[in-house]
Length: 402
Image 1 (cartoon, one colour):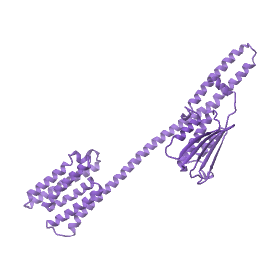
Image 2 (cartoon, one colour; image 1 turned 90 degrees about the vertical axis):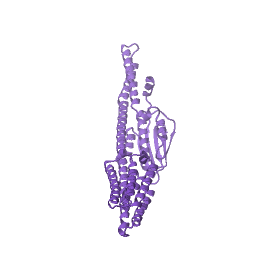
Image 3 (tube, rainbow, N blue to C red; image 1 turned 120 degrees about the horizontal axis):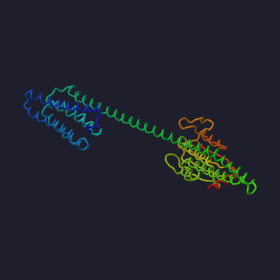
Image 4 (cartoon, rainbow, N blue to C red; image 1 turned 45 degrees about the vertical axis):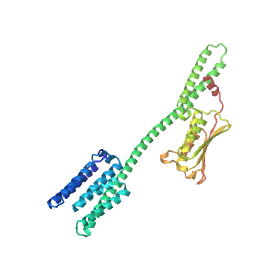
């Protein structure tokens, strides 16, 4: 493991492991010398060799960066330990730090057998050196192995849980930021729609009425009347300002409607793809130009209905149909999802906004109707119908101002 990636707790455990290994090797060497063991020089040399191999693991980059390098180093360390274990029974105490190294460096499918084999070799070595055979000779190494396994596997489980929570917190922070951005964007679009609707319904209509009145006044004047020129200039000023107001309305319309008609925006909406049902859009009847508030309302109703389909319906297919009739235009959104009981639908859909009431309010604000047909297990059909505006001379004025 790269030392730079260690937490303070892991650094402390690493230092303790180093000190434990050094202390156990020193103990084996000192006891061999103190007991005047004839193999004392060999024991000291084996302890120094094992210490050197162990220390090399902290300086060889491949041991920290590759699993193969770590496995080779661990193999060399275990070989040195076997040499020490063959010379003195005190070498078996070095098995305890070896347990931690094996569990840390090897995959679980290899580390657990390696720990068991190390404990078995330690027990056999103790017996082979003439130690008394008893429960302590077996329980000691096995208990040490069990403690090492429980410690390492418990830490790994805690580490995985900590990482999972860290990722969840990061996702939560990211989601909150995205939600805040989406809410700001939605608020901006709603304000743009409101301003466009207000300009269209008040300023633009007022200027159209002024033009009509000025035209009527101009026609009622006798030829060559001095006021005719002033009326013509006033009508031209009203016409220019009406054209400017309509440019404001177009600039404030939703981005989906900026580069095409309502039918084009709905077609792009159906082709967006992503999670959810397959969507298909079709147009019935002869399309006619619609006022901007009509296009905005029908587009928002379609987006809301499809959002409900994706989130709640579990549908496999959704059909969007825009129908132009002699006196009205109708938007239908039909899915084959699980359906619901319309009378039991909540007035407000929690965190997802006002849902069906908001769509109904949009349609009714323009003098239209909004209906929902659904039943459990039978899908859902949403229909919004708006009356087409009467033909007025305003259309002629629009042509003049174009």
